[in-house]
Every structure is written in C-alpha cells, then in structure tokens.
Image (cartoon, rainbow, N blue to C red):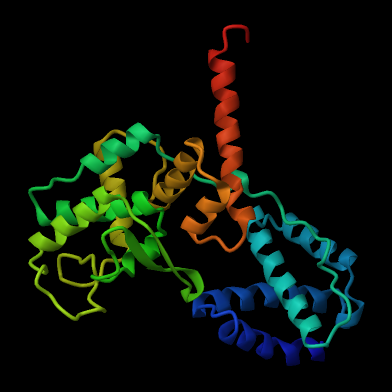
Amino acid sequence: MQEFDLAFPDFLSYLASEKGLCINTLKAYSQDLSLFYIYLLEKREGDLHKITEKVLVAFFEDLEKKNYSKSSSYRILISIKMYFRFLRKEGLLHHDPTLHLQPPKLWQKIPDILTEGEVENLLEAPNLKTLIGLRDKAFLEVLYGSGLRVSEVCSLNLYDIKEQSIRVVGKGSKERVIPIAKVAVKAVDEYILHDHRGQIKDKQGEPLFLTLSGKRIDRVTIWARVKYYTKIIGVTKNISPHSLRHSFATHLLNHGADLRVIQELLGHADIATTDRYTHISKERLLKSFHEHHPRN
C-alpha cells in the first residue's frame, strides 16, 4: 500500500489549500480513508491499480454488517470518491472504481420540523423585557428567517447584518450573502440597542450574539435555549437549532420556492442535498390527500 501512503498527505494538503476545507473536515476525511485503508490491508488488496468497484461494494457491505448508519456510509463514500478523483488528477491512477457507485438515500434522516404555527409560537416565546430574551428572539429570527446553520449564527459579527442582507461564512470558510427578513433585522437592532453596543464603531470582529459573561455565544447555549422555548410552547417533537433550518427550507418549498433558490440560500454545494426536502413535501401532500379527500 505504498502508493496509498505516499499520496495520502498530498491529498489532505490539496483539500486544505485548493478546496479550503477546515481542520475538522480534514480530520473526517482522514478517519474515513484510514478505515478504508485498514480494510484493504485486512483483505490484502494492496495494489491501488487493482481496486475495482467489486472491492468497494464488498467494503460497504462490510460496513453495513458492522451497523454503520446510511449517513456514515454516505460520508465515507464521498471521502473515497474524492480520493480517487485526486489520484486520477495527479496521474497516479488511470481508472476510477467509484465512478458508478451510488450513495444511499438519506431523505429519511431529516429530523422533526416545526409547523408554521409552531414557529410563530416559538418566535414569540422569549421575554422581550430582558436582555437575554431580546438576544434569544434575535438569534431565533435569524436561524429561521435565513435558514442558517447554528455554527454560522455563532460566528456572526456585529456588522455582518445589513438592512436587507446577511453575510455568512459557511462550511469550508465559504462566504455567501443572502437576504434577511425585516423582522429579523428589527429583532437584531433591538438586541444591540439594549446591549449598549449601538455606538460601537470600527469593530468588524465584534461578536454579534454574546453570553451573559460577554463571550461569543456557542452552539451549546443556543441548543439549550431552543429546547427551553420549545418546552414552554408545549412542543414535544425532538427539536434542535438545526430543525429551524430544515423548517425554513421546507416552508419555502411548500410555498412554491424554486429548489435552486433554496440551495443557494442554504449554501449547499450539491443540489442533491437540497433535493431531500422535496420528498418531505410529497409525503405531506400524500398524507393530506389520504386524510381529507372525500372519496378516499
């Protein structure tokens, strides 16, 4: 497996420099490929030139026997596909055994989402007479109003939100500018004003959302606050901050938004990721039909 060993560091360097992937993502790629490497050693498939689609199928069947989830297998497949593409790009291989391998369907992995009425109740739950309530109202409006990941909300700085748009740094440090609802901008303005930061100037790196101790808010805090408010409004679903992102996408789709537009708003590199939401909408359509059609 000498070729594997030699090419592997170059592959990680390629992902970091040309693809701009973060350290955690690089670690995930490394772990996934190490798993594949160990399997090849165990099966004595030592020559990369002789790895076929049949070998890969056997590898994923082995993962299934070990009870790996579909999402984990999907991630590992993407890592292996990326690696073989790199090997071909560098001229180390002349074939790609992953070319026709299909990933498992992942639509069923989408978590519980809130109805539009439940979202309204959630957004009205914070106590606006307190600074914490104003902060929570603001980040809830941003989470749902622009469909951001919780990590993206945590990394927002004071001047990232403009009158009609929001600057977001997403996965792989990719930046996108997307629309933001007026009600979300108003909620953020109210929070900043009462936090006595309305007069701050030239502090581009100043965190937008702060904890009680004055530090940048983290995902654990946001997760706890979302759980707190869903309990207050009597929602028993398993709701997390990411559920608001999924609710945002599903509600847009239900109201006729184009899938490509939703892809752009969510920052998905592959429209196949966004396409999962079409299944959810179809499921609801069928459920509504069967429940309410008089001739059914």
